[in-house]
Length: 71
Image (cartoon, one colour):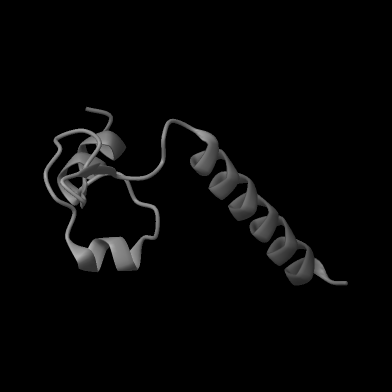
């Protein structure tokens, strides 16, 4: 096993831990309003393309950007 293999395994473990932490923090999915998947923050509908691209997403792109910016 060379340095590249070790680095790839470490990255895979880091990713798995990050995904696990994300899934267990807060409620991770969207809220359902009249059967429509909506953002947990602003309650606007989440576009189907975003739901397909990011399974289990609970925030719309605007609210996600605010969260990541630390707002």
